[in-house]
Image (cartoon, rainbow, N blue to C red; front, side):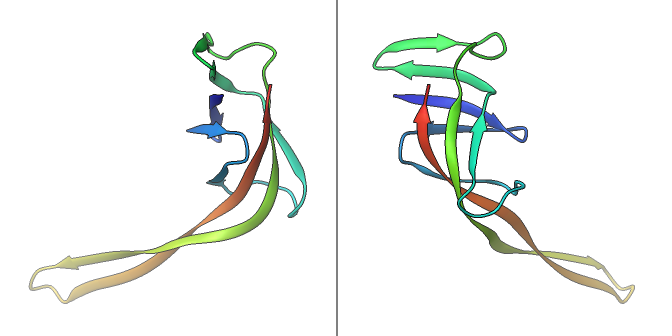
Length: 102
């Protein structure tokens, strides 16, 4: 059984006992969260597609920790002008364990 869930504008394919790295959410480590924007549910070949969401289905999970992603280097340069800018960025993510679908 799996579901496709919309979390903060991004779509994730989730299954029970799976870990996902979603955009940073409010809540402490150990808190439970539920996602009600379920777009598709597959229960052993029985597929339910929402228009736009599947009614009566929620995905519940538990926040494990807040982490940072890999560093992304932003480098800008203009030829022959002496203009060089180098910036770094690390995106904030929340590690969530999916506990149940339904």
